[in-house]
Image (cartoon, rainbow, N blue to C red; front, side, top):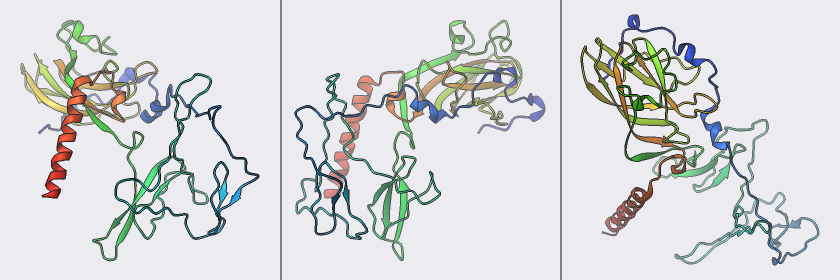
Amino acid sequence: MPQIGSKGEEEQSAHGEQDEGKRSLGRRALLTRGGVVAAGVVGAGAVATAVAGPASAQATTAVDMNTANDAGTSTTPTELDADNNTTPAFILTNTGIDVESGLNYSGPTLRLTPSTPTGVTSGYAPTPSTVGGDLTTTSDGILWFTHDFTLATPPYIAPAPVLTEQTGNVYAPLPAAVRILDTRSASGRKYIVNPSGNLNSAGQLEAGKTIYINLDSQVVFAEAMLANVTVTDTADAGYLTIWSGEAGVARPNAAAINFGKGATLSNFVASGVAEYSATVANVIAIFAVKTTHVILDLAGFFMPGFEYANYALGSANQTRNARIQRAQQAMRNARRA
């Protein structure tokens, strides 16, 4: 188990001069960069029914298409019932053809308008209903679903956010390990953002110094990375610390790997990922309490979605999908048995 390093051997500065010019943007803010918002346009051949003003949608009045329907203060929900076990009770489709470009930018098939409590703009949990299965959204765009824990006494209804790429992560393993850092060669040091003044003439990371490793070649937006770290040709007993290197976050007083003099050792590590600058969006930081060569082999990332990888999952992803399908079939068979 990694041990806590000695503070007496550490430099107290978390980042030193390398922090200058780093931005403190939230990592999730990157997700909106370069985004394209496409609105569906009704095609010329579509037929629309003109209705003068909002239609009444009280309990005994039909709901009209192509107009706003107002249920007023009615407490009776509009309900659809289907007496079958093969098809949905309700289907929405929106082809959303863009008549100018001819491309199919499908518009949303469903929009939930947030119902925000007075004085609250975001971050609230919807009030649970008396039954499970309700779907609603908050003003900050987070979907919530209510769960009925019927085993509780009395039954407990609890809302929970629906995981999306904005609220949850996926683990994306690399098709094969990638050596992103090897201080023993010039080519192995090319992803070090700040080599000047932090490496000795042999390329070793010097005692008390911190280097930042650019991961942009492998990922567009990462929350965390998993990797194998190796130290070799260590000058004395010491340890490495690996962390996100985020601006304003002090270097943790903990070891990713401990080593003795002249050692060659490896350890598997996980670390958060941070933004270094406007041009380097994904870095991790490595601090050495004693001079050593460092090797870092990436295994994978935690990301909002697979599309945020810079590498192609290709056939490996197809194999993964096939494995999931076989596992799902095995579970269905087990339930039938």
